[in-house]
Length: 274
Image (tube, rainbow, N blue to C red; front, side, top):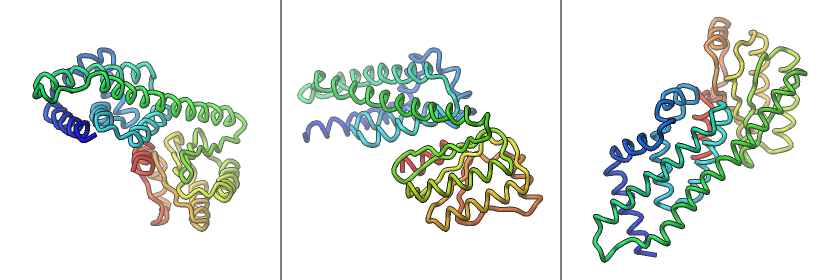
């Protein structure tokens, strides 16, 4: 076990020392994805390069729980922004190939007495990559299915989907128009679900709401206040500029206990990964 730990630590140091070379090789391996990196960053605030570095560290160090949480975050984020799955699959497989190239280089430079056990390492590394992919796709599919159901319900103006992420955190993604009728449904369903499911943090994603009338904004604030009285913290993500301008001109602002973040991705990173 001690030797394995030393190898893990040295391999991590080798990877970090040669991170630029890793990045260059990764981009050459992911032919179809490299031209989409900036687009994916703009759409979902997802930094593929940075996330690749994080994933490799989790894999090398064998941090299984962190790996699964990271995969869960990625799956939800890709589903929320309807990003193409084929790009993700190509990217992760390119990471796998590039990682093995660097493991081989590390082994060639190592003392022959400390040569890696490739049979055991192959099983461990590939199992961790597969664990990431499996967890990613399960959470992508689960969240995507929830969004599809929400969009279908939207036709009847009843779309208030509260999606559990873990035992204490839920996401409420709002899509389309938010009028007085729908906000009243939101109030009833959100407060009931907080009571029944003992939700501690409700992430309310408003990136799908283009505009809201001042009276609707005011009602939304009252819902957030009600949630707070029940011990549930509300985190607002994705506020559009049009909504913010109306709030400013009407002198409206969220309670100081309500946190606002730019994107759902940021909220997931803070409340799921951390």
